[in-house]
Length: 437
Image 1 (cartoon, rainbow, N blue to C red):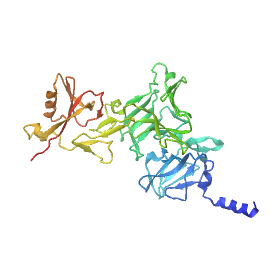
Image 2 (image 1 turned 90 degrees about the vertical axis):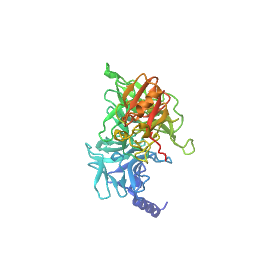
Image 3 (image 1 turned 180 degrees about the vertical axis):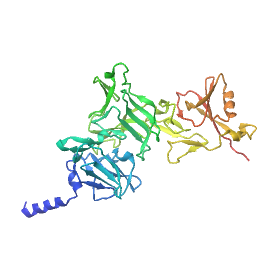
Image 4 (image 1 turned 60 degrees about the vertical axis):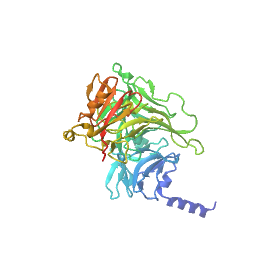
């Protein structure tokens, strides 16, 4: 090759955007930046190009999420995100600084999020092939890494320490923190629970790993480890492994794995082929907990798997479906997993002006349906006729459940609604009477 040609090639490489050159080995220098919506800047890729760090455009074309995603597969699944999942507008920028590390700012330059505080100066950043973005200080020590701050997903080689937590999304497309948590408690148990969105108060667990020992603290779990072969286990202080599942049967071959706390509260381990010619070309569930979230949530507070006054049924993939009973409708028509409201007045003042509540209400019969823990009165022994009439003529009664010869009367809002054969009962739900001319 002649000298002029070599010189021209060298000059061409110097003119390439910095972000493109940095992709070759995953490292990113201090001072590098990416701008949302700017096609001249590219995401920072890992050396294998399995993962990308940058701005992922959402369904709303004007919104972008600072995130890490699988780069090679068609749906480019997001596995980590900054700023608690709050998206930013076009023109926002993320850069690496020596003092704060990663800094996210809006188009006006106002800081929205950063990886600070960090203890040392940043030498460079790196998008690792494990899916973790790390900031490296002097002496090649990692001083910050995204694996230490998980969002809704764990990846192979990732470890959750005692006190660690995953938050579900609010919905499939809304990455803000949702109602469900996976937590490794200080007592050693790994639990799934619902929470209050405003106060972050955690409600009763609906799954636990049974890695608590009140006598011998060395038997308590202190780490959740997702190893490179796709197995997830709780490691105890005595170095015992409590495998969460599956214990056998992981597919052989070249696959990506991820464990995600889905927006509906189900923790699922998925796999996806790495090669383009392999099948299936989607994420396939391998294992999930709990088996039936509709009936496993029995918290005395909170909504349950679905919203208030809603009914939960489980599908073939152990995921919940939520629906409003007849006479009720969604408070948010765009989110079937939220609360339902009655489409008729349910108050005692209305009843006082009627000689019979039969003029105001009908009773909808629902088999194997219940809203546990919404009871305010139990009547026993009671027949079906007595149970129906008692609810119909009680202005506080929204529904009544007949099981055997017991009648439980329920008040609004109804929580933990479920339809399942384990209920083994009959519900009489008050609805507005049909008007006739």
